[in-house]
Image 1 (cartoon, each protein chain N blue to C red):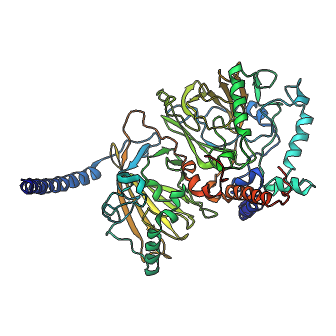
Image 2 (image 1 turned 90 degrees about the vertical axis):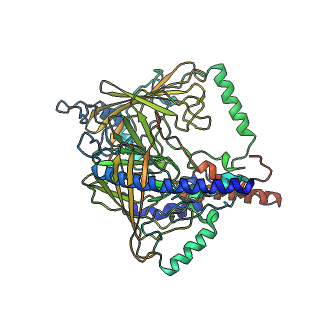
Image 3 (image 1 turned 30 degrees about the horizontal axis):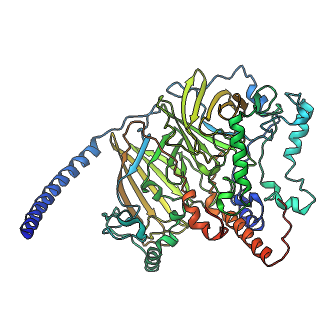
Length: 348
Length: 278
């Protein structure tokens, strides 16, 4: 817990008005999640012969609690590990130590230091996986090739974006900075607040996200999706139990949600699988089907590790003086430029 | 001709009013009886089942106290911009403000659009989240009960038999719950002083505590009571009460209402590059 530090985030956001991260004016007010030496993917596979799947009184596997999916492992396999599916134990330990110590390893360059937006101590990125990428299929750990239509969509988006400045309007800023969408569906981990609270009833699984406090309602009664006329930022989820695995299919996304991959909302479907494997771990994987964008589907893992609660309020928009200051800063620069003054050095 | 029609109409109206009064008196007594007799179905752990999507059908979010219909401040909205009248949901009718606080309430009301935090899509706080004109869903776990509100996608966790308190102020506060017979009682505290109770400027300080009572009174009704205490603003604790109605349509589900997007032009429009088209 870092509640004693909460006052600092607001002040810092003013100082970082020209950095893209400045919108997150609320600090990561959460309990620290990962502890212990295991990689999350290793933990999710650990076999404890004495452990039995806990069941709810109505007989569903019990996956309730607070879970964390923070990890520093990238979605796609980095080029220097192109032929390696797993790190060695030694490589993993080095990386885990590196990410654990980032809080005290501040960059020497003051501009880089400032660009980190917060005192480094705020971050809670989690540990690396043993795997070198979140993507497990295709086996090369890379996103599949774009379809010709997908490439066209990506190019058109880039061209439209290039016509605008970094901050001509609030609409030019990232969704996270505008407090509109953070972890989404599937929920990709970010630098902090990667906690999820699951509560079950006989008819629903609810997943309350720490970030933006939004709650995904997953009905289990086989009802139809909303359909494309009622698109949602986080799509529209329907779930079912297949043995011990909760399978959730999500579709009907709007065209404004952004992902860590290229997405075409018209055909996007995400299939998530939650399987509890121990008292402390859920084996979580998701498959993305997006046939107008990618030539094949892809599957990634994001193991969930039990987290100590509780989750504190993340009131993003309420304290978002950063977004206003980003816009204010850019307007100031434009006035300076008009009057012939040299622009201030920008770090990013 | 015209006046006689009017007179006939007024007689009819009067007759209907009397009938309605008689009927409502009748229904009030039967609903009171139903309240005493109704036993809610139980969850697997033996507690009254509050699961479902619920919504207030009243004008409390405009003004907790009684108020006539009035013209709203946004002319372009025409008839839709009018604010509907409603009876007070406050026990005894009026909120017992300290004199200075009543003045502040009036100032708040005079600058409603400028000052109401919910206009900016800020988290609505408690109890306002309950009676915004949007549904909310109760997801009833044994130890933790989620309250998920459609407006601003606000949410709360009620810790059943929880003993902790909030380590810092927040918008939606900290909620510990307990079962008293068939009623879920929620002690909510740890609030900041930034939220209002309605669009009429009714407000509180960070000393606010709210004791909420949720009681099933029928298959599709949930009685909601909230006792509000704030010694810095009010002369005594006061109570609101209203029924909440189950959304019974097939496949009823909360939709997203990410109102941040709808408040951005209001909040940041003056900082947009002038030559830029939205």
